[in-house]
Amino acid sequence: METLKLSEVASACNGTYNTEGEINAVCIDTRKITKGCLFICIKGERFDAHQFADEALEKGAAAVMIDEDLTPNGAFVKVENTTKALLALGGYYRSKFNIPVVALTGSVGKTTTKEFTSLVVGAKYKTIKTQGNLNNEIGLPQTLFQIDSRTQAAVIEMGMNHFGEISRLVNATKPTLALITNIGVSHIENLGSRDGILKAKLEITEGLPNGAPLILNGDNDKLATVKNDNFNICFYGIENGEFKAENIVEHDSTTDFDIVYLGNTQHITIPTIGVHNVYNALAAFTVGYFLDVPPQDAANALASYVPAGMRQKVVTVGKITSIEDCYNASPDSMRAAIRTLRDTAGNKKIAVLGDMLELGDYAETAHTQVGEMVGEYGIDYLLAYGKDAAFYVSAAKNSGCENAFLFDDKDALTKKLLEITNDGDAVIFKGSRGMKLEDVINSAYKVWEK
Image (cartoon, rainbow, N blue to C red):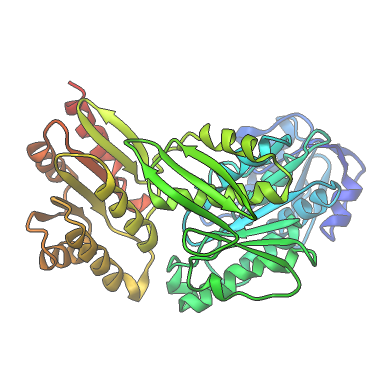
């Protein structure tokens, strides 16, 4: 981060300050205090960081930001609301740099697309990206503060649960290019319908300059309807779009395809499987085109992708092919996971599925549809865990999967999994983060590795 004066900080946040000074970083966690930083006292659900203001100063913070009536033992900036001020300060800081900034959102695939995109953009520019899932009003400004005089581009992921969130994020980010991966049903409980989700995602255009590229998935029924003469809309897809993926061939752990675009063709190999990842890589390549990344450089970058965490990571454990995909789950990503399992080589195909959370009234329908897909795709075994997982099981059985079992205990599920797996089988683990299916993964791996 480049140095800011406290007078700048106060002005950017419509606040006041007690004495002039300088900051060289922004921090919201006292465990990560660095000398010369600004410690912002955020109020969370379970704590109020104002109680750590003096501790932050003692640890080396140059100043603290507060919104309560207290007098810290050092320099401070006082604002109306520290959470809002954090985002405002991030927006002010971003405005100091004239660099290409990619903003991306979508119901599923955001983080993987962000990883692909940062690789492609990074093939030409020194690029920063959203770390982990820091894609909300607290996390996003922390990414913006990573920009400095050496930064040539940024790739910023935006998440949301309610109307207005992306609007606030994009106005701070000030992107030069925007990308929406798809419109599914994630957060439908808060947004009412897929049309509501589309409206919320399109808030990303509010911070986009006229004429800027707006890259959309042309195979998504909702995004395909988007029209806006203020932007340079470009569609990508397998069926529709100016940038199309053709000749898709999946191998055990890689996928080959050609990108056909504007009279050109570029061959691509990505070290992961699943047609959804073809879409993610295709989106990243399209971004690269608009940022003048040479196509072969983009292809080389995509080939270097390494799946992060438990995001559809394919590993061989003993003689079992395991697909770890427990970072999160929605109806769209769950269907993609079942499709991936179907297309993965294996003697038996076994799906270990946990609940999809935060679906509200849509939960029964969503879980039922996934269960139907398990049966229709010929999956040999379904081991389901959770309350709503009962809908998986009943629908799977009705659709032809006789070996569908429901568990309310992970140890019992693991015991059954170990009982039915043999060398050469393929297993996928998929569920919402809160289901913690990694407990099953870790227990099973200890046996399979022997």
